[in-house]
Image: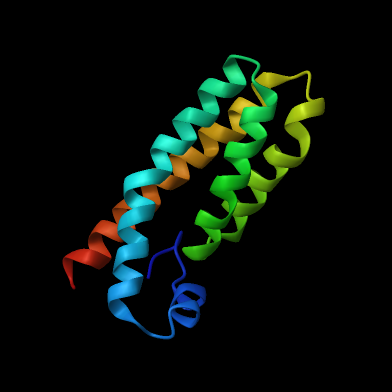
Length: 115
């Protein structure tokens, strides 16, 4: 599809159901930046347990659109946030995810425009 999204996993999971794939892509597009902003705010506020739960919620969203790198970064945040005394490092990871998500949303928009 694009350099940030690989629909092979989603296509296999959906068993080729294009309507289901479209719904999942729309859900990703609608939700990911909201969840990432929530994660950013939780880290800034020092709410580590909430941030861990939010990172856990985000991780599979990236897997569904075939972006292992972003899923691994969300997993890294989930695993390390509670013991992290360097919130700026975690915020840098979130900002990377935001940047990648914006690129993925553009790819999704392009894909959906052909549907």
